[in-house]
Length: 537
Image (cartoon, rainbow, N blue to C red):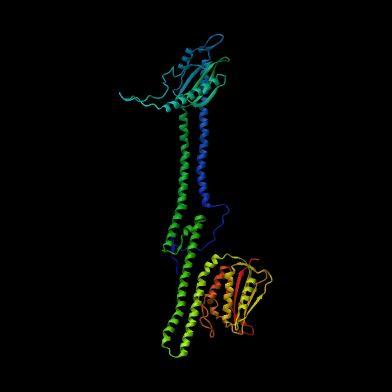
């Protein structure tokens, strides 16, 4: 029966392949991390570069103002702007003429202080520059006076006082004879680059010349504009990484989700997305795992369907026999025939009871194997205990058991003692059902070879053997072909099928073969079932 698969592209599902082991983390995780780090690195490098550029621009502006102020201070220190002999001092009138005649750009402000730190002249006073901010538009006549926020007024007064204190501190420091340069706030709240140069006549400090440049905001605006390319590149990298995540992660996961929904809605039996399964990352691992899981579930469902069909067929046989016997029983008058029909009914009931019991055991086997965790057990001790139980409970006429332990080394294996015990009991029961009353069942434990990593259990009988064409068929469910002379209905045909299922679940194998009479090679002397299990010394 073919398995329907949920897939996006045509093509059959590929063979299961082992998942690659990675020593260096996740490929998708590394890609995501690399892209995110790349965008962050771009912003970080851009911020560092622009920070240095900003510092360089401000320092260059300070250097230019310092050179300009030193030249102007030298002019002011000449005799034309000083008065008094032998103790010279700044002449306010002459100094005002110098500042007026000296070109001072509109975005600069020059102030001259005397030796006591008092303001002598301000370039705004000798030029047409009007400091401050534009006035608010005139209010219509009769309008109520504008509300004044006391808190805002207080904050503005505090800022004004702070700016004046910063300027006074700069002038006071320059009066000591050391030039000063700093970035501070002006009285109007703007950021300015300010330099204060002592005005000297020979060696005497006559005052301080302060130059301010109010183009700091323009410098910062240029810096922000220069940062934009870095931000745009980082944004492009982030968008590209998001697109990659969508193409390589989100969309494949959505396809896997849609395929899983198809399986859930019983539209398909298994997931098959060949293009995703070929990927060598976590998405490929997930696609392969989902395909393997759904295919295993599909195989399990098919096995259950076949099992249900076989069970239905096997149960109908004794039920049909019982119904026929019950319909015939009222018509039979002879007591001997009635007893024969009654015996047939009892035989069919026993057969049906055994069949239902074996079916129940077989249906629970998978769940028991999944629940029961393997552990270390001694196979020799397990065989000895099982044989002792058979010998203790033996009845007259039962076929005797012979146990032989032919290995001297350790006989420990990793397995489940309950299911493995069921394997041995099923093989013993099967051998006893075929052995003649004067025969025996021989159980042997040995190793296939010296130092072999496996242990071998052999169960032999003296029965008629197995037809050569059925040496493999006997392990199929409900195989009940038995030789003449055996009691009908005493076997359900599930015992050897359960044996193979348990042995394969333990990583071993089981096979059947006939025992040849050494004196007559053409004569079959019995059957032998061999179970091979891996060991753990």
